[in-house]
Image (cartoon, rainbow, N blue to C red; front, side, top):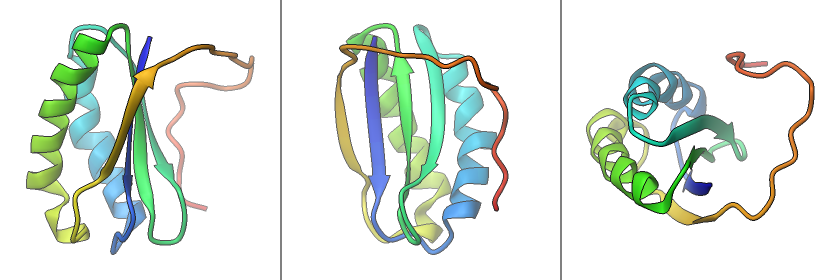
Length: 107
C-alpha cells in the first residue's frame, strides 16, 4: 500500500476546503484504479490536508496528478501556496473496530 499526504499551511477556511475536497475530489479519487481510502484532516487552525491510500505507488502517482489539478482549480481561493507533499510505502497498518467510513462534521 502507498500513501500520499498533502498539507496546506495557511488556509482561509479549513472547513470549506474539507467540504469541497470530500464532495469534489473524493469521487474522482474513488474512481481511480487502486484507490483504497481518502481522509481530509485538520492539522491546526489554518492548516488542513489529506491522506490518500492506494494499492501501488504507480496508482498513487497517477491519482496525485489528478488531485493537484483539482486543487489548483477548486481551492485556489482558500490558500496562497502549494501543498507540502509527502509520499511513501505503508509499512504497517493497524485498524480498529470503531465506526469507519463516516463523514466527519465540524465541531
